[in-house]
Length: 112
Length: 113
Image 1 (cartoon, each protein chain N blue to C red):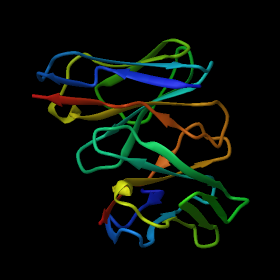
Image 2: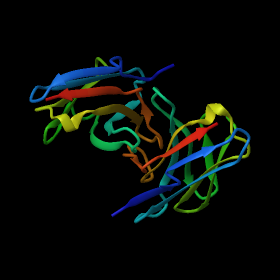
Image 3: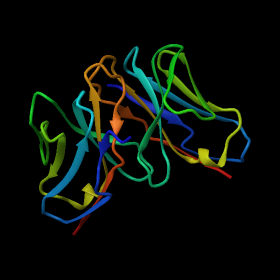
Image 4: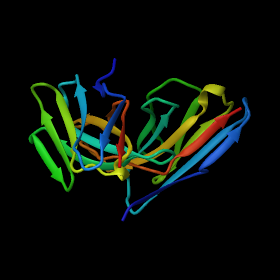
């Protein structure tokens, strides 16, 4: 049973436009959410996180939105750049959990 | 600052041969340590995690094992590799407690032939 779902395997966006990556979760005990970016043959790098007491967190071009009632979060990248082309993973954990549960990832392609 | 390093970066091993992947973390003490695998076209699968020396939790039954002989060292092993063990293996660390941000190493490509 997948507790963290990224239903779009891929997304194509033009440079300068907004990229919106979506993630849904089913476990109501999750209260901490993260996004990671991964290039081929490299380890994922941490991008941004949000705890359940917030509904928005910004870091430069990256903003994460959390809708707890819908059990949905999204990552907005504005403006998108070709260097943003990568696989993006959504992850979640509960307050006292030592591990993260990852989605299967969405491949973002930003074209010039 | 904290750093994580794993090796080897790539290896090609015959079926039935042993495996040893090593990982070390610097700049922190008593970290949580993790081994993940990304098979081709799939997401990140947690294999093992450890909250302390000698404490290993296995998430997926398989022919792999993990050990933590020192506080900041994590080793992934197999006595006999299978073709299905091929994949991209990632070591990672986090601070202890909940709401952890996990930081990954560079990854190791394993091809079993």
